[in-house]
Figure 1 (cartoon, rainbow, N blue to C red):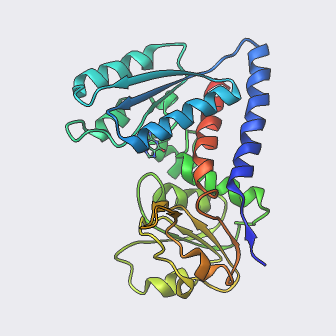
Figure 2 (figure 1 turned 120 degrees about the horizontal axis):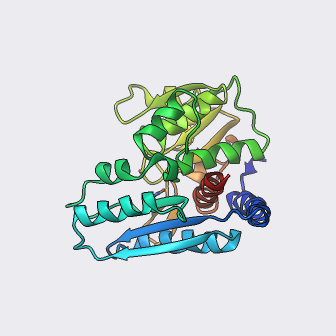
Length: 278
Ligand code: GUN
């Protein structure tokens, strides 16, 4: 029987640990505030932003909300970020992506000071990760590492294959698995013989962005499969990048969608916020 990795439970455990930590820090007179910036009315972004604010409330971090209309200029947004960079009360700054087309996301990410970059998207944060220095780590891949560790899954020495090479998930995921002494391959849309490469994996992390693309023909018997994808299918049901029903009898452990990787992103964001006070 495969282990179904319960991201909801692990995320709750982490948030409860953080809640205790925040209470202790408060006794030492240290408090935290996260600035959450949303631009426009994208419904998915509104859901994410609300969940982030709720998580802040749960663990005892103040969230400062800034919701701007779609028409805000790039300059106005950058000015707001610069103001928050200087604000001593603010420990973390999060700008919900995607942004409207007239705003350069890279510029926005670079404007957030690395000391407050709780998303871990700043080039300095990414660079620090790649050379093993301290810095904020992108939340979703950090969450995957926690899922593996807290499920008792050894990474050191394992063949780890990451399918997907995005800056937010695939690349930092590979670096984190390497940091844990995994033997890491990054595969992507141009990889030749993708099935053969994926089948080498003891730990297969899938972040391709295509619903149910990965079936049992990509999975070695007994592999651990981590599904980062989330999509809504024709029947309005959530599904991942992995064809769960097809692979379930071939894996030793798997993350479901929903309830696997998803809840971990916010837990790790909260963890980054707490680190920013410490
Ligand atoms: N949009 C989708 N995921 C994320 C995330 O993790 N952080 C931010 N800032 N925007 C996102």
